[in-house]
Length: 238
Image (cartoon, rainbow, N blue to C red; front, side):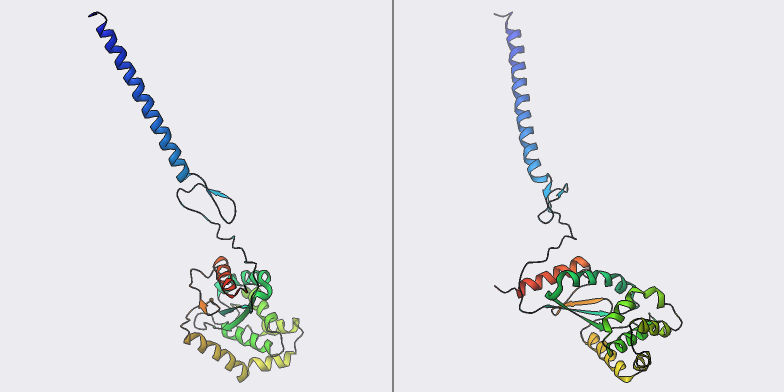
């Protein structure tokens, strides 16, 4: 019996070690399963793509889906812009895409806010756009001014370029030149600028969606779409 006692002790120790190892293994496996359920790939609710970021729901900022709703009146989008402003020029094609996407669900209005202290030709461009409005060609001139911003922005005198645009648009050039120098056009632009200042606007581009002004950080294509969608849902006819 005494001879077998050390052997029994060894067997018992080995058995205890095996049991402990099995217990720790099961515990580790259980912990790993719990960890996977919390930090594994999250399913993106908007795009269906997955993200490996732990513990957060990542959404694709470019995937902003237009709500399928009917509204009693379109969402009003106002832009206070400067035709020579580079950020305005970069935002312009994105706004055109948004207009195409939303169609009659939105109504877009442009207000002049030329920052003439930093953009020497911005005021002349605003005059050209309003002179074109008097011949029902405002949006056509608006488009040309932004699309060709680099052509006239640094010109010593941009007016000959604007006159060329008027010719291309089939406008009465003599009337266009006269209107660019008129008090009527000056008053329209001055009224826009005063309205901007009264609303606390001091930079461009500034966008206002149904009376709600976007911050500089949210004045992006995605931010604008989100703002429009929010207002469309508020206006939805039940």
